Image (cartoon, rainbow over all chains, first blue to last red; front, side):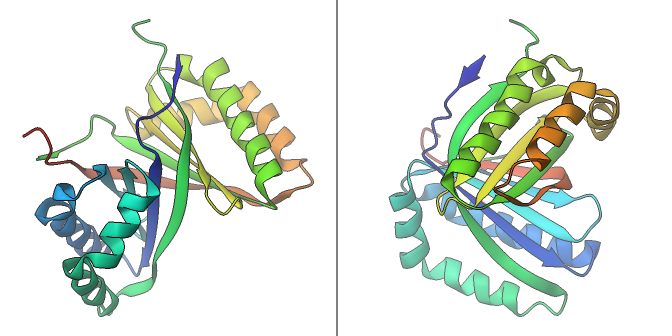
Length: 114
Length: 114
């Protein structure tokens, strides 16, 4: 089965860090934002925070209704800006957060259960 | 609401290309594999192919039950290897596919409907 996802826009945000400790700190900062206020924003659908198994990256994937909703959030959310500064100040931050703006193309689900 | 995702492993695969035409070709190759045989593999849950809005990247996120299922697929699937070679032969391929092995940490969903 192939389906189009309901999301019209996905923000893929990659942050490189010096190791597992900073990785967890960065992940928790993303969670703090997502749980605290981002999930209340118009157009937000869901987000998953991923930890790379080698301890050097955090990959956030966030689905939004459309890119305009994301831009509205990104440009107007002062809490987000503060959280971004907090992240930038971490000594263990190597690079990022780097945003890749994406459009979901197709989602494929397991054949199990068909 | 915060939930743990059912996936125990997520493969984030980034491919850089020279523009929208190659981007679509790469996306369709990933889809061919996912629809054709990957979705039948034990442990596969779902995958989404994303196109970056600037036309230069394809980002595949694939959820698996666990890393062992993914490794078993990756190491034993001859169709996958053939598709990989087809992708590498594309003149418009810039770099990749680059795999980032991830563990989902948390998923946050919209507050709407609570």
